Amino acid sequence: MTSKQRAYLKSLAMKLTPILQIGKSSVTPELVSAVDEALEARELIKMHILKNCFDDPKEVAQVIAERTRSEVVQVIGKKIVLYRESKNNKQIELPKAGKKA
Image 1 (tube, rainbow, N blue to C red):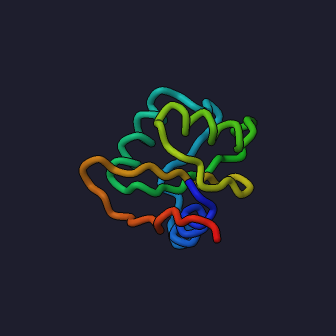
Image 2: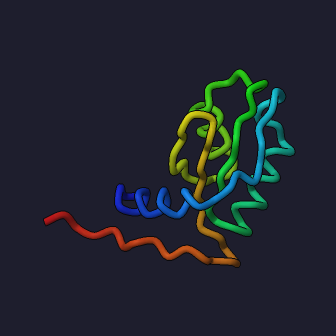
């Protein structure tokens, strides 16, 4: 993913509200399954890590991204934004990866 594409996704994510919360049990198979379904339906999702989860948000984001084959767009504080192109429900058109002059 290019920096231009990441910036575009960040701008879209600003308007999103978190749809999933990560609590004290951190990354569970149920959470990974829910994230997987949400990514297929929406492509771009925002999650919130609750105060009772003591894991590092960047590590949590990386683990979830690996397990769902998605990309971490950004981690700000306790908010995580993930992106994965949908197979059946494509909604977001990323800017083309252009060559640098």
